[in-house]
Length: 341
Image (cartoon, rainbow, N blue to C red; front, side, top):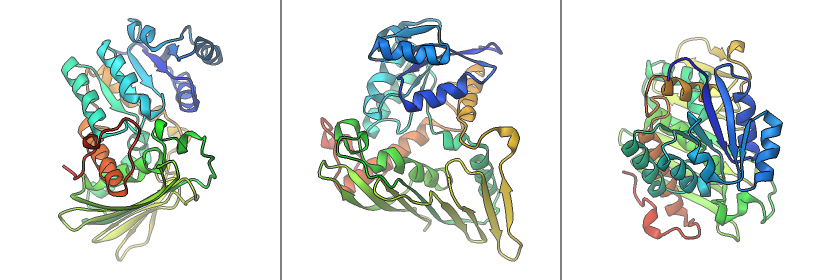
């Protein structure tokens, strides 16, 4: 693959698929050529909305389409293993929405499929691709605040969500942790790597999913991270990174920040703001651009969203669920990692 347009297939027709596709069709080097759903009517409606030439009423036809360069999987995360696995087994490259899978066992199976087949696979952790988050990470890596001592991040929605909502449905991997908590946990991993220990507490629903969860992650060097997620209370979606020589504060929307403030000991505070040339702060184009860059370079993994990092995040999510006692239907007890690797 060189500089020709990258041909995308879209698997699913829900809100996330629509948001991503709306950004894709606005990119001059991307072309959305096919969409698939469980219903041909839904696929055709989606195709008409975005001017997509091919609409399929099943996943198998999309998997067999040899006119694709990559497939974006946006099904509910309870179906990520099946959907992404089918695409990989058919020889397609895949961008799979977060959370990557229900648990690390499923995630490892997808990674093995991709690596054994020489296929590109990436989790759609758009936060890692966001220019402001990459800038923050570079500042921390360059020692702007010294050694990282503590990371804080939260993501909560006020709701209320009825018991019939997907966020309350165990069969769909419901709960605050996988849907929202993946962001604070991934933010902590981005800056500190995989923790050595996890303490967690949750408020569970009658259905057995977590309505809110708080976790304290710790590392052998003494660093800590406090993460929180909720579907029963709206939070500031703020984050901070405290180091031995200063602090970085993201006042809101930490996973797609418009600005952050660097406070270094003995210096005036410095505010960093998003470059308007990068487009809207909520744009998913940066994620799509990273996928297309990697494909053109012949890479099967992205260094920005590495698969080993995705597996590490899934291990931490598994450990938190193990600590608070959340299991999903059909999920064996040994499908969860009870201790971080």
